[in-house]
Structure formats: structure tokens, C-alpha cells
Amino acid sequence: MDNFVLLKRTPALERQSKALGFERLRCTGEDIVIINSFHKKDVLHSILQAKKKRQLMIYRATREEMLRFALEKTDIDMVIGQEFIHPQDSLHFLRSGLDQVLCSIAVQRKKTIAFSFHDILTSPHQAKVLGRMAFNMWLCKKYKVPMFFSTFAENEWELRSASDLQAFWRVLER
Image (tube, rainbow, N blue to C red; front, side, top):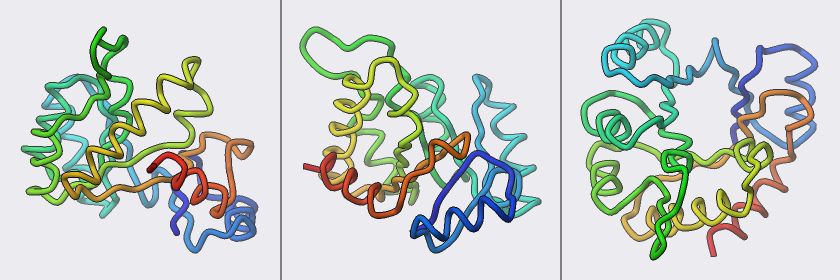
């Protein structure tokens, strides 16, 4: 299992990641790039820069239109943060950021939907985020969309062991 972190690579971080049971550590700036923009031109420019450096491209969803654009028209590898697109749920259903159309597009274009443990830890509305993630996982399983779960830690205190993440993943998937 890979550990994706939003930190710079250090020897201490690599040792800690190995000790927590991860096979590989992927850091921003070297291995991955997080793209979050409200404008299509900025997203396309960031993708070109990441392609030159051969980095894994992860798009952090900002709006529903931009999420669809990123899934449909760009070469990103993963999408993250779709649970935060809509500030409030509808009275009758969850507004989780994904729907059957976006899931179908993700399958056709071979995109992965990623889920972040950091988003759960730092959210002031953890119950809402957990419910939306569980619904998105249900949609991804139904439409056979590839899913990925990692820490996406922004500091060393947010790191969790690989076995803890796998156990938490199994609980959310049900």
C-alpha cells in the first residue's frame, strides 16, 4: 500500500512511513501534484507542468462543473475531495459530489476516485463527511470505479498505520 502525503520527503518521514507498514511513500512536489483550481486554463496548465515532471496528477474538486471537466477532458489520474463540493445536503438526499453520470465517465476514462483520511480528521463536520464518503464508495462499487484511500497527511501527526487505514476502509465500505 502506498502512503500519499502532502509533505516534503525527509529521511525521518520515510522511516516513519516504513514503520507504519507502508511499502512506498509518495510526497507532493516529487511524486504527486495536487491540482485545485476554479479555472479550466489553470487546471490544463498544471497538468502540462506535471506531465513534464512525470508526476501523478490528483485533482481536488472545487465545483461540480470543474469535477466533470477534470474527469471528462483532462489526463488527471485521481480525483479527491468531492465530498466538499456542496456545503449542504438536500432535504431528501445526500449531496456527496458524485453521481451515476460522473461514475460512468470515471470508468470510461480510467480515473480513480480517492478518499483522504486527512479530510475526515480535519473536518468540523466529520459525521457529514463520513456519510458522504460512504455514499460515494457505494456509488463507486456499484459502477465499478477504481477507488483509493490514503492518509494525505499535511503533518507527521496525521499519519496512521496501513493496517488502521485498511480497517477504517472496511468499515466505510459497508
